[in-house]
Image: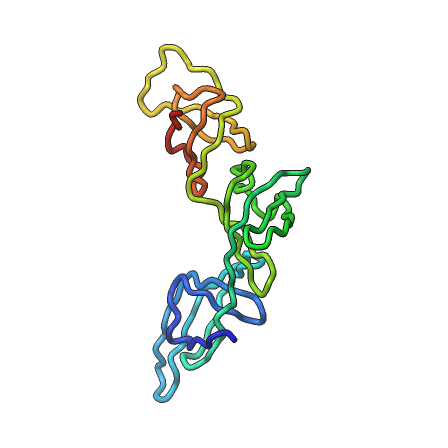
Length: 192
């Protein structure tokens, strides 16, 4: 059974459940009453973790809500077939697919065998979380421009997974690079 949380204890980053959906508290503001005997109001900005819609809601300080029942599992990316991405649960070896649009830009960093984690709420998949840093091969990149200054120069590189990132001019096709998945940013060249 999930734990009950009082609105007065809300903090940014907490997760709550409303009408069967899990929400992330993005911002909290406490408003003191102007009349005697009135209760403090707790104004929150919430993001629905299932639909990603953002909404504002006001609670009385004594109001109680449930804490959502989350489960995090380790999964492994297996392959891509059309717009479907296939994963395997590392715990029970069940395979499942997710639409590429569900992951958005993150789908561009998936390579075969990549270990990720998935977030489940009441047995339903909410999303896939990628590792912060992934190692991916560069499929193609622009040639180095001779005579160009080295200072802060970058060029576009298409990764084998389909994503495009800006890399330093010395990176060539076939090299493996580390990429920050949160920002889609080149981190380092992998030396082997």
